[in-house]
Image (cartoon, rainbow, N blue to C red; front, side, top):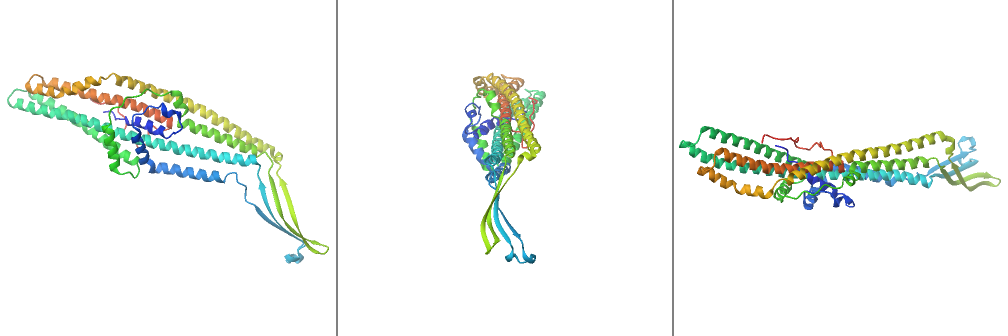
Amino acid sequence: MRRPAAAAAAGMLAILLALPASPLAAQTPTLVDTATTARLTQLVGRNPTLEARAAALRVAEARAAAAGLAPAATLDAEVEEVPSGLNLLDAGSLRVGVSRELLPSGARRARRDVALQEVERARLERDLAARSLVARAAARLVESAAAGAVARRLAAEDSLLVAAEAALTARFSVGDARYVDVLRLRSERLRVQSDRARAVAEARVARRALLALAHQAAAGEVDALIASESAATTRTLPPSPDIDSLAASSGAVQLARAEVARAQAARRLARAARRPSVVASLGLQRFEGETGHLIGPTVGASVSLPFTARGATRAATLVADREVAAAEATERAILARVHTEVATAADRYEAARAQLALYDAALLRAARDEREGALASYRAGDLTLVELLDFERSLARAEIDRLRSRTDAADALADLVASVAGIDEDEPDRPAARREGDDR
């Protein structure tokens, strides 16, 4: 049985809720309610991955606070004409001063810009990590609920087969049924029980993965969310969002843009290094005069001469220019790749929506209402065992396939999530590999 991955669709809302100012929020499909998403956001808030990203952001902020500040002043002293080389008090000249480098305003601003770009990148990485965690937690939540729904449907099928077996046993005892019918019914029950056990295992594995993502969360809270999602009414699948907007707002593209901004700031810093810097000094000097020792102020300045190292500064500027060009080329390449991924996922999503629209909900409800009537007809001898098994198997297959159509749409939305927020599709917490089909 295919892994119920409708959960991944839940991640779409979770991811984009973290973009408060994004125009994307109004056009992105969602399959879970905002209250569930908000609760999941709280549960994954203490995840170690998110805490590590937050710590990296604090480091970047601390570095930015120190960037562009004036360097420390330097205290220097000079003594000349010392008698006997030891009598400092009778030295002919004694000077004490303080000097400090005065950076050009452009250089200070460029250093701050580089540091601030690192802060923005660290903040973006933290936000993307949070969106990824919430999306993956939502995926595990809905997956557990969907697997539980499949298990309950198979349990209902097994219950009908148990009732049919009781009627068949009564017939067989009086010679009104064949032994091959007994074997057929028992083999059908074994198949249903095997499928149900697999669905129960999938629900448990998904629940365990959700507990791992919701670090330090109580198991009762997770179970309550799963129960709430299981009881939620079926939501209508909205149309796919605008592909160009999704691609342009993806996490990978945003990181690439942040790298372009950082490279541009580094280029401004390299160009600022070509400007002269000044070191100013101020102090006091005692020197020997005609009437004894005199004390007076000293003022000094030194200026760097960048033109004496034109080759080095020109090479540094060339490196910075090429780093900017490389970052811009990388951004264009990433945008093209993400656009293709988003378009492919959107096509899959629309195909799943079209398939789901083929199911007639009213027809399915009418068929469910006929289940007890079919069993009663079998007991009365108006319906053969083969006809009863075919009816129940067909109804169960239609209902489970309808659920799979929703999970196909959810998988496509999960691909959109991966493309938009930079989520790795093969995340390590994914409980089970997706199966393309089963024996039904």
